[in-house]
Structures are given as structure tokens and as C-alpha cells.
View: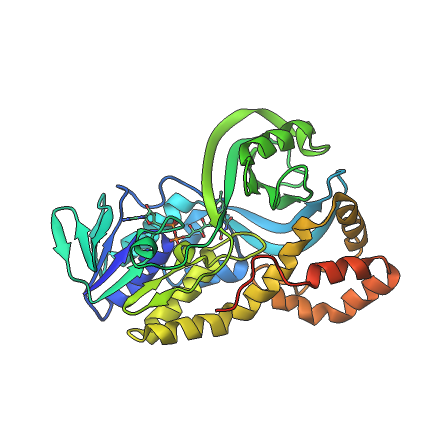
Length: 368
Ligand SMILES: Cc1cc2nc3c(=O)[nH]c(=O)nc-3n(C[C@H](O)[C@H](O)[C@H](O)COP(=O)(O)OP(=O)(O)OC[C@H]3O[C@@H](n4cnc5c(N)ncnc54)[C@H](O)[C@@H]3O)c2cc1C
């Protein structure tokens, strides 16, 4: 029997795929899937296509996005075009769990604990042959079986009435004054999800963004309609040990430059089911598929730690950059733009020093 702990998207997709051929139990501590909501729900077109295999993802789409506007601290911005979608996480998670229940036995409102290698599920003790920790950033499985834990960022997000620059563009706010990572707004009709990701004081950064940012502060209309907060892992950690494997946020499987995890966890679930029960092969296959993207993503993330002056220069220069062909989930797609990048540097020689700074080893990167 395989025990999957956690019925977020990672757990549900894994339960569905493994449950087709094996006995699977999936346990979730909450009484419904996708609750509390801790996600902005922004996913790429490629990701939507991938989720279509597991649920009617179209039903969960709240908005279609045509690009992103990247703001400097002074309020200047450039646009990067690219198709994406905003999905409603509660609905997405519910549909995925419903699908999983076709093949796996589901235990809701059951927080799994471990007594040695035995899982405790309510008043039952289970001897699982394999344990899959799909239990998020605070993974009980990872803690109980001695996995390294990734450090994390805190994300705080509100929903409020907001005059988006464009109803179909997300906005990204760069600069140390408004976060230690990045801040964002994602429009949904008259409202937007506005969030900040930071190591500490995320609430204070959010307040500052809303009250002081030269562009955002002029466009927030009214009070907070909803507030939620969550954790985002900073890096991938080793995710296989004996007969135990981690997947999704518990393993730090998120894009290093956005914290988005919905695409990587789906790829991981597919690699796990293709290679099961060889867990080391699962690890190898996942790293082969996405390892390079993670390493390149860690470089891109260095942009967030540039000084405000450097960010102003980068934003100014990128106004003339053609982002066509760049995929938001695959930083390697930038490599196809090498000539355009070279042209940009030739036109703006001051960028050389900044690019060298960005390309140096990331402070969180690690070899697995
Ligand atoms: C504010 C915010 C915004 C985000 N925005 C985006 C975005 O726009 N796009 C994107 O791709 N990603 C985004 N993410 C990241 C995304 O939400 C995660 O990567 C994704 O939810 C990870 O899925 P998961 O299944 O691994 O973990 P989770 O979704 O965290 O699910 C884990 C599940 O395990 C359950 N659980 C935990 N412990 C136990 C236990 N002991 N027993 C039983 N059950 C347990 C939990 O209740 C939970 O249901 C965002 C995250 C945050 C915090």
C-alpha cells in the first residue's frame, strides 16, 4: 500500500496516477481540498494544457493574461508579452481530488503523524510500503524521516478593488522598498490579488506597497476584501530517501524566480508514476527534465537583489526588448534570445556589469 500525505495538487495528481495500478491511500488534514487558499493561481498556457489531462481546468479559469508589466521602484515599467491564465485554486484542487478518488481511498480531516516508520491515521496505525510526502512546506513526512528542510519566504496576499493598468496583464513590482523578493498584482475583473513575498515583515512591505508605491498607491480602491498568507520554499532539497519521497512544495519544487509550484509538481507527479517504484529513478528523471530550468531560474532571481538604481536601468533598457518566444516556466527559452540580449548590451554597455552580477552563483543554489 502507498500512503500519500496531503491532498493538494501534488498529492491528488500522484494519487490518481499511482492509484490506477496500485493500492493507494491519500490523507488530508483539512475537510476540503484547496483550503485555506494560499495561491495567486497564475499558470502558463503550457501548464493549463498539462492540467487538462487531470481535470476540466477551463472551469477554474478566472482570467486570461496576455503579459506582465514589470515596474521599477520609481514607477517606470516595461511589458513582457506572454499568454497565461489565472485559476481558482479551491476549484482546481477539488476537481483534482475528485479525480484521485476514482482510484485512491481518500481520508479527509485526517492529519497524518508518524510513530517511527508507522503512519498514524486517526486511531489506526498503517504500515505503508511507500510514503509520499505531498504535505506542503511544513511537511510532516519530511520532518519525521529526517529530510533537509528548505528555508522559505513568507507571502502575504490581499484581494482588493484595483484599477489595473490593463485588465489582462499581471504587474510585478521590483525594488527593495516593496519586498525582499518581488511584489505583484493579478487582475480579476474589478479586483486584483496584490501580494508581497519577503523573508520577513511581509505585512509591512505590503502596507508600504499599497500606501507608498508611486503607481500602486494611486490605483488601490477601497479596503481589503480577502487576506491570506502562506510560505514559499526557497530551494529544491533532496526529495528521496529509502521508500519515502517528497513531491511539490514539501520538496521545494517551485520556480526559483516566482515561487510558483503548480507546473513543476505536475511534472514531478508524472515522473514519479512513470518510474514507480524506483524512487531514485523518479529523482533522476525530474532533475533531468527541470534541473537546468531551476539552475537558470536561480540566476534570474538575482535580479530581485539588484540595487534600486540598477533596477531602474534594467527596466529602462528592457522597454525595447522583444520577449516573444520566452516561456514563463522555462528560463532556458531565454537562451534562444542570446542575439537579442547581446544587441541590448551593445546598445546599453552599462548592462554588462549588471548582467555579470545577475549571472554569479545564486545565494540559495545547491547541487543535488
Ligand atoms: C501567496 C501564494 C501565492 C502563490 N501563487 C502561485 C501562483 O500564482 N502560481 C503557482 O504556480 N504557484 C503559486 N504558489 C505556490 C503554490 O500554491 C504551491 O506551489 C502549491 O500549492 C504546492 O502544492 P502542493 O500540493 O505541493 O502543496 P499544498 O498545496 O500546500 O498542499 C499540501 C496539502 O497537505 C495537507 N497536509 C499538510 N500536512 C498534513 C498532514 N500531516 N496530514 C494530512 N494532510 C496534510 C495540507 O492541508 C494541504 O492540503 C503560491 C503560493 C503562495 C503562498
